[in-house]
Image (cartoon, rainbow, N blue to C red; front, top):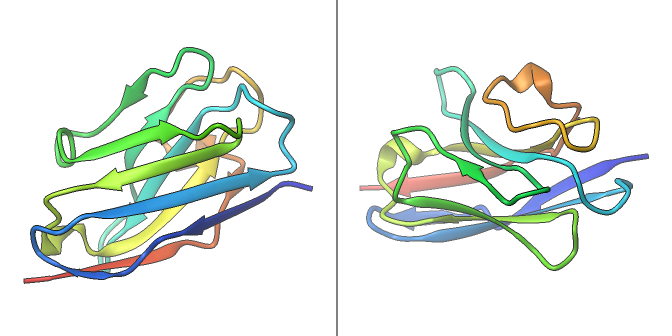
Length: 126
């Protein structure tokens, strides 16, 4: 049974930083693309970062590029999401997700991800 758990959400002032963590237990070690999505209030869910496990390549949308960084932990099913220069538009519930099969590439479509965490709230005040 796969379980995805996020942590690190908090309330911060604009310009601040946060680091989110995600661990996917139950996945055989390594090989799964993992991504972060966010769901702002009143808006659609959007992908904000993804990492391909086999080569470590990452993808980001223009809205967060240069401010957000996804990285792998030493444990092969752990990822981190560093967020800098936060602004109120970054307020959302942030979700970690993993693809179902090893070596499937990153995707910005949430339907391509099989395993999801419960989400962690990030609130940025001006």
